[in-house]
Length: 129
Image (cartoon, rainbow, N blue to C red; front, side, top):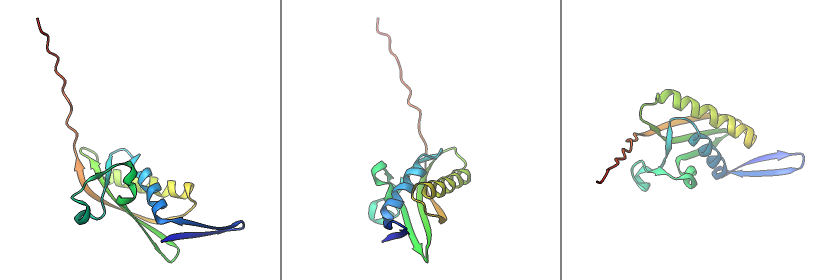
C-alpha cells in the first residue's frame, strides 16, 4: 500500500515500506533503544534484534481515512526508564516523518518486546616472566 500526495507539480506515491524505514531509522537513534524487534514473532523467531537493513520489519504503518498510524516493536536497554524511552521514540518518529516526508502522523504506538543488558567485557593482562 502507498500514500498519495498531490502537489501542483503532480502526484507523489510513497510506499509504506519507505515510511517504515524512516520511522525505524529515527527510533534506532534514540537513547535507550538496542534495536527493533520483529512484528511477526511467531514467523520470524522470538524477539530477534534486527539489523539496520531490517528496520521496516519492526514497524507497521497503517492508513485509515488520511490518517497515519505507526506501530513500532522495540527492544530497550536495561537500566533505562521505559516510559521515557517510548516517549522519546514517539516524539522523534513524528518529527522525523513530518520533516522528511511531509506527512503528519496521528499516532505512534510503542510495543516493547524485550530488554537487553550488556555485560561489560573485562580484559585481563598477563605478564609472563
